[in-house]
Image (cartoon, rainbow, N blue to C red; front, top):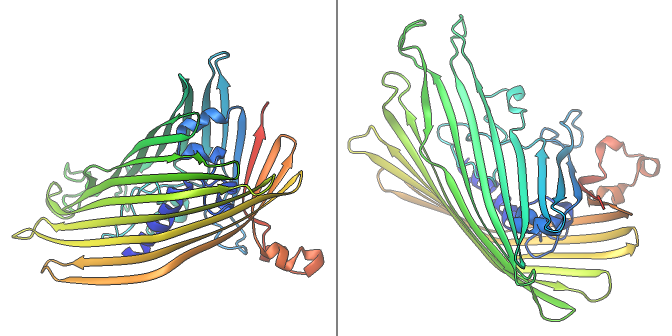
Length: 444
């Protein structure tokens, strides 16, 4: 189970390190947000908001609960909408306002044995013991960007806020429910673009906390002891990251883009006594998280309106868990370590004009991965498990340009394999046209 959870972290971390934004263009060009110049860059380097004023964006994809193409019900498909506003006249500054749908962060995954850190790279769809209705809320409240010109450099800030909670205050039989749940996450980052737009730097910190309270088993209804108490309590959770890239134009045909990123964080919580002494710490878990990413990308322009990109690099992801039995005498601790070494990763993409109004895009990624799990129990006995495999993806994209409106599509290849219903006779519910769409409108 923990391996599956870490696979989720890894898969989404790969996206965060290379294309934290889900903008369709950079995705279908091989997850190459890091080395491309695109409006999606603002999610990696907030200072780039200055390059994209007076724009409106919409991200469109299936809702979280549409699990396959045959699903009859799913939530609204517009997952994010935002506008970059320009103010200030002679000294302009840019404000980006973004709001979300279908994005949900849970306080932590379900299960005493399966609690894992909830980094921003790992959206969680809710614990299994919370019904579908309660898990359907979107708790990502907003993302704000602010950009300003500092001398000859571009400066930008990004703030993200997620929060949701519920509380029962019911002493009526048969419920007697005083449970309380809550989750809050704050993300602050700053970016600077220097050297005539060639160097991008960004640093940020995420802080998050949760509330998990339940009734005590001690006392009877109406007694002072019958109160909600902290069954799980956070002890400090944060994630720090630093990233940068440099665009070196070797010639009009070739531009090289060395880049790097480091992320470090910790997630810690305690589990308190359920039956008798609610202030007594029974167990504690502590997670330490570290990742590094180093690579060199290249832009290749062999002809007008044709762009090829390739990015080759190294990535290392490590997660360490310390589980401590605070009631044992002496105190006992077991330890689990999970790591991914990706050497190399290769990301390939191409974009070209077909007509004035149509662009075509292709992309492919290959992450040559070594996965290791090392578990040490209370008796200091260690077991090690290792896997080696490639983690691969391919993409097909189309871009439509209608005056000021630009629509980028992550296309379902079955559209071309099967065709529309009037050609193939295949029920339209069995196939879709696109996995994802991004729309951009120029407001000038």
